[in-house]
Length: 123
Length: 299
Image (cartoon, rainbow over all chains, first blue to last red):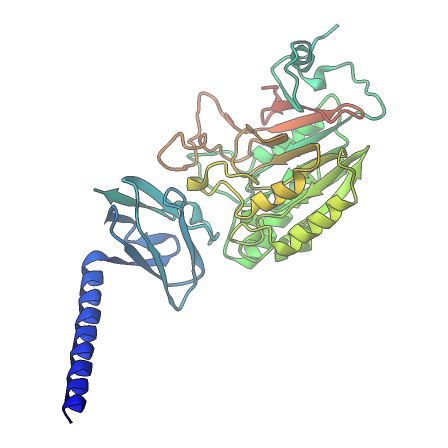
């Protein structure tokens, strides 16, 4: 009996520790990840100018409001297609300070070349 | 005896595969006689027929016509003419796209030289994957041979993401396997195959794969358009040479914060616009480029 109780107690404590660890991990992630939602439509991103912190993970969540677009930021070495009707997530950790232009790299019509923005990475 | 800049470079031991000839040193100013293996061709690019924007080109409907007249007036007529894409300006309307392609075709039908070849730019082809272009001008990638030179036309625009694509790359690989490693090869593309300036989308997403396929061949030269200005670059021994456009010039790579159409200069109308003549001599894998303004003046 005693060993059964002890086993139950040990499992309960372990479960509690696990739950606390998971909750803490989510909390830490929520604090340290920068989640930025961006909509894309012909011929603009909203927002088009983004500021993030160096060394802090960033998740860009793209939604296209009309057709296939693209996101390319050569200075940070990241790109993604942005298909319509779904959220596209792009995670990266900015490693250098500066202002980095991005643009749509899937030709989308007459204003395509003006579909641009910037990511500013600060200390 | 006239010494061209090309010859001067050779004498100085500075020769390379392509020579850009300055004013007064044009191959078109020679005595009009050419050896049987010599030939000239003309590259025109980025006419953007259908574009309107008086601040960047108040003569949008006249510029291409002037260039056609200028080509017709060349002292030596080229063996053939190559249009390296963006024949028309993009439109969402399929009917309007065909109307513009037809309008372009009508204008260039006045060219005296009837051997004229075409390839699309993204403005012609990216919104319908080249469907309308093919109706008017046929295949978007193909090869042809002329006086010992093998010409390869690559399509890096029908995919809106600027991919050549695995299928076309395999086609390129198969074609190259039929050639000797020292064959004279000229490649036409619309966009640069190399990473000219990625922040302005001046590259081909899988262009490095095409360059890798071409690299074993010792005599390869690429002529392209897209960036609306003359530009020269080398990836190892492969030269890449962009041509001026015929609607509006664009700034030098990275020279301005944003890529914008450069405004019309009333003091220098048609500045930054033009076309080029390219001469090759016999069995030499050398190309001499002469740049012309829209009205045929040597630049």
